[in-house]
Length: 132
Image 1 (cartoon, rainbow, N blue to C red):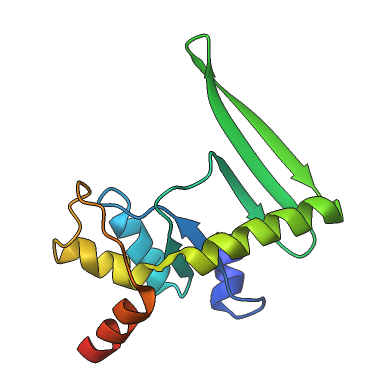
Image 2 (cartoon, one colour):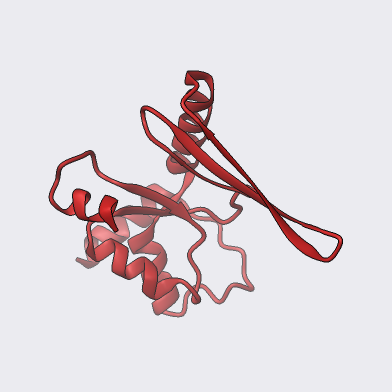
């Protein structure tokens, strides 16, 4: 929780998190939103979890092998890796959906998980602002 404490005391840049938001993690997402974390929903997350800053990156990849889960961990301060993962994160962020809108859609029953919704983000954002 050290990073979250530093974020709340504003002793660093804002924190951003990209995840797939669904009914199972809705309460956790709401907790982090209340803490001031910016969150975006991305439907198809890559098969790798990673964190990146301006100085280093860390990532994990999990896969099933012979009936058991194996996990690989990558940590680097190599600028090429940092640039690559920052670029990947920024592209996913740009194409993600604001978590507040996603949470509202789930709570209002608009998203059952069985229907694919094509979202016009600018229209959705305008509608969200009108409802405030």
